Length: 317
Image (cartoon, rainbow, N blue to C red; front, side, top):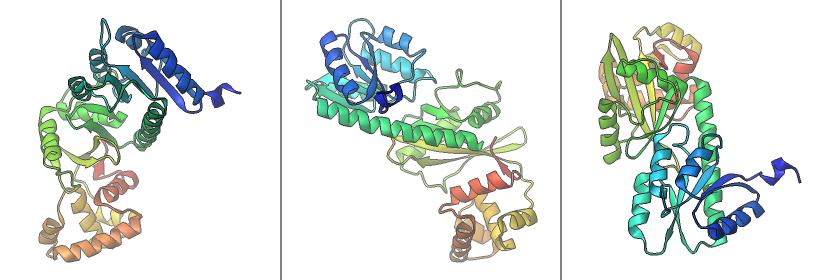
């Protein structure tokens, strides 16, 4: 059997100070086709993760020395490891450990004694989800769009290279790199995002705007499907829209180009109608035509098409 086929399911790291637990879990996962990495404490796990990149980590909550909670905290504070899903393993009835694990960033838990069928099911689900998220991250990074994923506490889970530059311009600091990227958003943006999350106000019509050094920066928030994270789509508007170019490049009527311009600037249907002297219903009908011509289904997707094809007026930072 080839190495590629043998490890076709992915890589799992197990962190547990009990050798018998490591052996049982390793055997079950390897038999199912996973490559397995093992560590007997948090410190050795962190050392291995300087070179390894597992798809998921099984973490014992209570260990001597650096326990699972502290290890999880270190992993979530490091941009290189913060997006790895962590499944806590805890004893039956240890509710406080379970809740603490979630607060530190765990995505799931297993109750000891662990059943092989359950661990394989949970690991498989999280590996599949992590790979889907990774494909989305890679696609967004290649697109050049400035995008940040945050969790419900506002912690940055991952960000595209364009978002690194956007954050630097937003905060007026030196250009950051991935290793030194901040763990949280700038305060004004963080407060806005947390308020939207708390009120479930993640509609793509919700817009955060900041003016700095003559530039206008905007952000939209949207939930990720099947993931407890939220996407921030970040843009810089220069204001130099060319409606005729927009119309010709995207095959729109002049009125459709006008509406798309105002939508990209964060206006609601009612606001666009007021500006253009039309009813919100008329604006909505025009939007339906715009979506059909651009092959998209949402306002945010339409704006993304403008950013990609036009490169003027609205652009990723």
